[in-house]
Amino acid sequence: MRAPFLAAAGALVAAIAVLDWSTEPYFSIGFLYLFPIMLAAGYLRRWQTTALALVCAVLQEGFSNLPPSDSLPRLLLSSAGFVGTGLLIAELLRNRRRTQQHLEEMEQQVRLREQAEQQVRILVESSPAAIVTSDGAGRIVLANAAAQQLFAPGGPPLGGQSILGYLPALSPAVAAGGRAYRTSLQCKGTRADGEVFLAAVWFSTYETAAGSCLAAIVVDLSEDLRSREELSLDHLLQNARILMSAVSHEIRNLCGAALAVHRNLQRVESLRGNQDFEALGTVIAGLERISAMELKPVEADLGAVDLAALVDELRVLIEPAFREAGMRVEWRLAADLPLVWADRYGLLHACLNLARNSQRAMEGCAERVLTVSATQAGGSVQVCFCDTGPGVASPESLFRPFQPTPGGTGLGLYVSRTIVRGFGGELAYQPRPRGCCFTLTLAPMRAEEDAKGP
Image 1 (cartoon, rainbow, N blue to C red):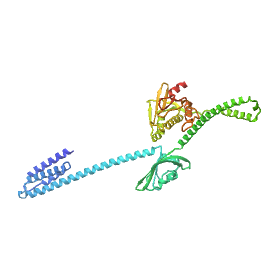
Image 2 (image 1 turned 180 degrees about the vertical axis):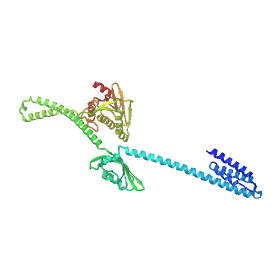
Image 3 (image 1 turned 90 degrees about the horizontal axis):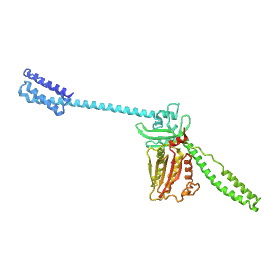
Image 4 (image 1 turned 60 degrees about the horizontal axis):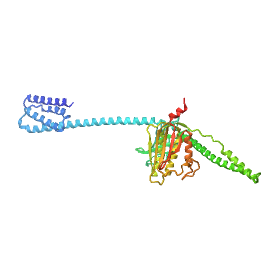
């Protein structure tokens, strides 16, 4: 666009000069130079516009056939007029272009802002978590569909209602005034029909022109709580049965020995017919019957377990405690580990027990490193827990219940091995020159499916 306008301006300057030269004496049309100057001013720099105006002023004075006595004042006045007009038009055009560019930028910003707001609205409305905002008085300003479903399913809209009626624990944040909150909590939540549920709330306060406001993300944890408590109860009962079986086994051994002694003493003539001796025999026989009762094992929740995911969960559970104790955990997991056949919660319980045993054993050691490795060897998967502790003084007493150990009763290894054996695995001690090493042997999922057959 620039070249055609400049070419047109040049042609106009030449045409005006020729026309001015051909007119009668003492008559000038030099004022027409203003048009090419205005035409070219929008595409030239300031010094270029000034130069064009001066050239036009000289052409006007040279071809106007006016008296030469007043040429200098005419030249100065025409130069000033042409230069001023050219610079004024140039600034007007530049300002117009700046204004147009600024307007385009503002329109672009508005479009981007509208797109961002639309994305935020879509995110809020499609979120499975309840999202609510409230003003300084605790009245709900915004609530997505998940919040409506969580607090008042089928009820009136939440807008305008008090958030404290549904989450009373947020009252300190609502009444905080200008104090900033950015935290989370678990508290009691109440639905519109009065039903109570466990709520996990992530909330923050922020300031607006209208005052302090609150934004909260709410999730119902009731189902997770029920599942967790039921799972904990099932494994508590399972551990209790394992311990009762161990106690019954020990009592049965003692009763067997006591009964053998009682039968030998029956041969003594002086004890025959003794009521206290006969009562002692009755007590021993009763204890033997109680200890002989078989406890039905609890059925484990067996299935395919992703060992890599389970190790990630174990890392979350033990690494902070090891780090605080000045210990280090090294993880060496082979790539492409297969799924294993196990009770996930029971396997995690056994791994956690082995890790805690290593942590207790390494207290006071100069080098405190626990190495957790997982490899596939042959038809099984092995998970090893090897530490740099003092080792085991009496390996033959491992896995026996009620064996006194530093800081425990010796039940942890017994219960862990019983749980692991419950889903076809094995927990064994691996002797090594330094430290202690326990190995969990697990059946891969493919091997378990082959064993089941078609």
